[in-house]
Image (tube, rainbow, N blue to C red; front, side):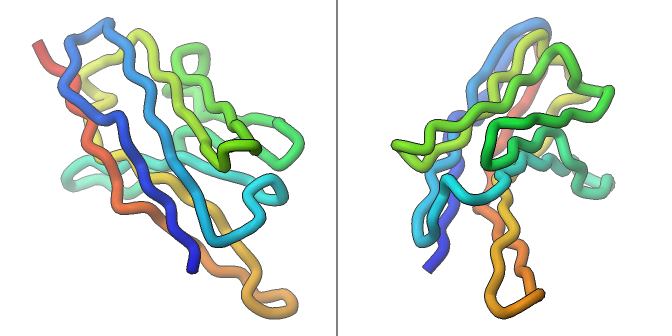
Length: 120
């Protein structure tokens, strides 16, 4: 059974930093791309960072240079270091991976989310 459990969300002031963690289980973590998404009220869920099985990363322009995704395959954990936080970063942050369940069939898996609020 695949499980993704996020932690680390909090209330932080603008300009502050947070590190989110996502502990994964139920699959061979090291083989798959891991992603962080976020969703704020009234907006669509958006990708904020991705890391491949070999460590390649990608970010949208909105967070590039401020957010860093990393992974520890020994701990089956993916992290999101967020610096220079802005009020518009306020959202629920979700851990995500896409896993095969049949030949050429893939399924999205999501964690329960962790709330990040950036406010003074």
